[in-house]
Image (cartoon, rainbow, N blue to C red; front, side):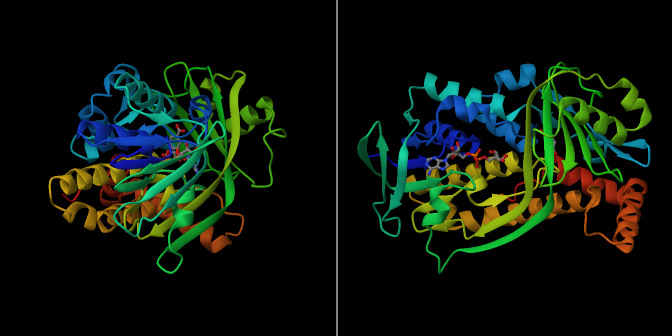
Length: 391
Ligand code: APR
Ligand code: PHB
């Protein structure tokens, strides 16, 4: 078959790009190696910047998000047995974030794609990308034992960190930058009311903790854990007991516990691949970069990449290649700032096994400075709600 754009991966990056292209009148196919149920079963962060909210509105997919999502004008930092509120709204001149689970957003995008009659091939096996150094790239895949070939103008690699697209980029051009943190996040989802109306990021000598939520009746909590830990060894009881130890006394007393619906351990990593364009192959989202979850930038970066890509491709079909020619550069400028912010927030709030007493004192001083400096608080808030686009 022939299409203008072949999108590899039906995560948030691929689905959002698919819909942006559809709205721009560009014909695309999405090829996904997993089933829709598997894609929806992955629990990830749930904090959207205004930019991501605007994009969903722009393509007419924001209705449920506005009805069910929670608008947050601030969050708390827990430290030394107390809590300090970061007034995002006040510090940024009126900006907020939207708390809406990635699973829900993915579902909305899948429904919108199905309603528009757009083609998505789930459980596509052995996806491979070819000839993207020329004008007519090809994508091959196998579905139900039958081989298929898609001829296209462009390939969008939205296939996540372990995908095939970055792995197919020429090794002599691709450069990668990486930091792996010696710790993990143990996440627990439960149908219990959140302990607080807003998120709480906690620095504690026993390790970081985060109180987040999916709705007023569903909570998402995280504990810093060792990468050697297993989910099995963390019974629900152990999890709740440890969370209470890391919370301030008032929150610990208010915490409502209950059976977990999901528990998982995620490693923390910072990673960037450069460039993000190889001829007619573009990388977007986790295929090109990973941030540690502190700061919740992963999904937002995926949204900003595909915003640039969709605009660049629309311009290309209108006769102007400037957008796709500057795609990599413009994405990376925003990505590195989010990388810096996520690394900084991670460094500020976690308990690093290798930290010496000097490192710990500097970390405490940094937090103390942040919480008492309007300039530092403004910088935190500006980054948390999302940096503005350059164009
Ligand atoms: N062929 C087809 N599909 C593939 C292949 C492949 N070889 N490899 C991976 N995929 C699919 C995955 O199954 C997944 O559904 O690509 C999709 C990539 O989705 P994500 O990993 O969610 O990445 P992305 O869409 O960039 O989302 C970025 O969402 O997933 C979070 O942590 C991530 O918050 C970040 C944001
Ligand atoms: C989440 O709700 O899963 C979440 C929220 C904020 C983060 C990370 C994860 O920084």
